[in-house]
Image (cartoon, rainbow, N blue to C red; front, side, top):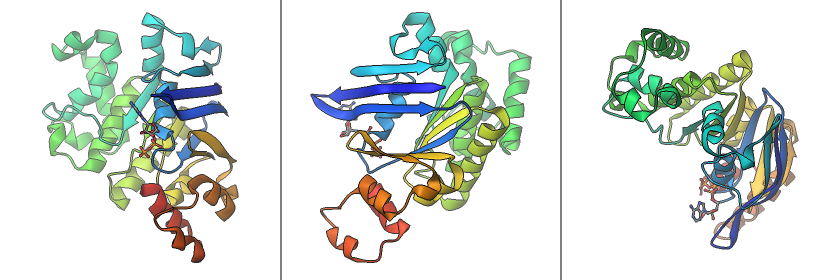
Length: 266
Ligand SMILES: Nc1ncnc2c1ncn2[C@@H]1O[C@H](COP(=O)(O)OP(=O)(O)OP(=O)(O)O)[C@@H](O)[C@H]1O
């Protein structure tokens, strides 16, 4: 169980995340939605301690994550893999080497670059690529792949960390619908088959509804919705996305989920 207790982060005296309290059960697929600037990325980055909280606590089972330091913190980061909108692959390296970089924490950066990976690790990396349906790209330079393929390479790399939690920060924001589906299907499969907790920030409400067990809505850094996808009605959406001052007239039109998607992406 991952527990956030009154978690907060301030930048220059302004709260990006404001007293967020959440419990995420092991194996859950949790979607986080909210307008641009609502605090979704900051929340995710605090969970793996890429960003240090200003206040509050993060617990995972019997670990007090928010207090970890040194080697223990490195271990937590390894247990808490992250994928990003921009994939963050090393473009000039081949795909299978990028995947093996998921073992970086075991070799150190220089060891990894010096080709310190074993044949067994290479086999595991190829298996991960095969699982994601892109084994045929293993020897290509990562930069030659499509965005959807690159994101699946990033997921394979995350898998090599053997994570307990997978944090995905807008993993499909720059992908076309078909690639988005492939990436979300992969995340869901990993979540179900490996029982890895997935926390995913999403701008697309239909996707959030279709793939997540539970949805948290953030507004101005605070949790304003926490419930099942089917409870995400128009009132909840208005609470999450609010009135758009630029296009307030939209509120006078019949409310469709796609309206909110436009606002969310603004
Ligand atoms: N490193 C930083 N320094 C200063 N302010 C920051 C920093 N990171 C985030 N913020 C601010 O914190 C608030 C929340 O940002 P965050 O990126 O977490 O939101 P978000 O919901 O992920 O937005 P988006 O959907 O656009 O990625 C914003 O006002 C942002 O400008």
